[in-house]
Length: 97
Image (spheres, rainbow, N blue to C red):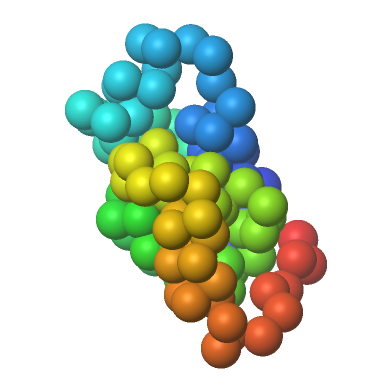
């Protein structure tokens, strides 16, 4: 598993002020993942995005709601409620690297 790259992608997309990079993620996300040491499951989870799978893999839980917000233009309260609903039964994620 390449948790480093999972978190790197999520952080890049969440914290980028580069509108070209963000648009590239929204239009051609496969290109953003090129050259990164990701398993097929990690690629799939990032591309969907499958928040439950990312959380279970150990993606940083503070980065996942803003990562959801990149595509889902919900208000903060709705977004956080949906995030908590997704992860509530998953326990604490493994953050071992």
